[in-house]
Amino acid sequence: MLAPRLRERFHGSSSLTSLSLTACNNITSLPDSISGLTALTYLTLDRCTQLAGLPDSIGNLTQLIMLSLHGCLRLTRLPNSIGELTALATLDLSYCAALVGVPDSIGDLAALTTLELCYCDSLQRLPDSIGDLAALATLELCSCDSLEVLPTSIGNLAALATLVLRDCSSLHVLPDAIAQLTALTALDLGGCRSLQRLPASIWALQHLKALSLSFSRLTLLPEGVFTLASLTALNLCGCSRLTCLSEAIGELTALTALDLRYCHALTGLPDAIGNVHALTTLSLWCCSVLKALPESFSNLRALTDLDLHGCGALARLPDSIAQLTALQRINLGSCSSLHSIPDALVRVTQEGSIYAVVSAPCVLTSAPERAC
Image 1: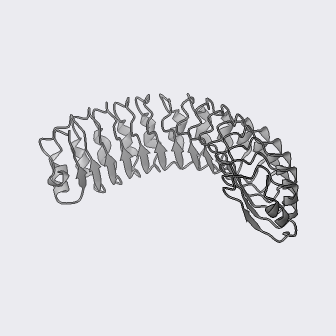
Image 2: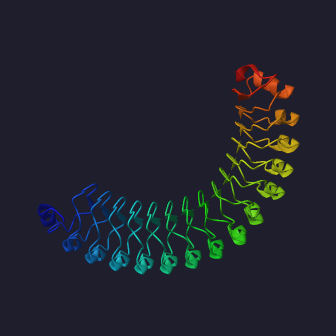
Image 3: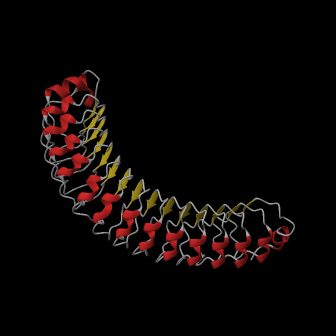
């Protein structure tokens, strides 16, 4: 319950605009009298760990812009009256571990731009009405372990720019309707271990700039990924079943960062990698069966950072690597099969143009002085 003294203070506080009850662990409910706070724009109830619900009268707070219930561990549901908060722009329900769903009335939140539902372990589904959130720009659902599917209505979110589904371990399929999210610039599917494939229609996301598929079980990327003309960052870290990249990667002319760390089955890179002229950062950390780099590497004239640490099967570097005129750092630590570095690379490293990291058990017989 709410302390009587605080309950009384809700009366006659109609001019109050901001109320924070963060970490008030004795609160189990809010009184109906909260509806009298008609000027309230910010309500923070973070870490009220005993709060089990909100009163129906919460819907009378029509000036409310931000409602945060972050870490309300016992909260299981929201009242239908939540849809009456027509000015609400931000709703944070992250770490509400007992929350099993959100009401259909959430679709009435016409001003909502940010909805955060991360670490809602019991959340099983989103209502179809989620597609009615015409202003929604950010939807975060990371680590919702019980969430298996998304409603097809998600394709109606015309303003959605950021969709985070990271570590939704039960999510096994994405609806084809995701291709309708033409405003989407960031899509995070990292750690979605039940996701076996991406919709072929992903090519339609032509404004997408950042795509993370880290620690997924994908064996191949759909060709549609390589037609994403605006893509600047591609994260494939920990894709342990990925054996190769398509030659079509050369079509990603805007790509500046490619993360291939811990791709333990990746045996090589396609020649077309040399066509990714905007690439500045390439990480191949612990790609343990990677045997060689293509000669086309010399075309990566914008590359500044190359990480080959732990590439235990890498026996040689192409001579053309010395032509990477923008290269500032190369990490060759624990490249146990690498016995030499091209003379030209040794020379520019000694001149100070490149900083090389070489550490045991790298068994080089020819190495730059600064690497030791």
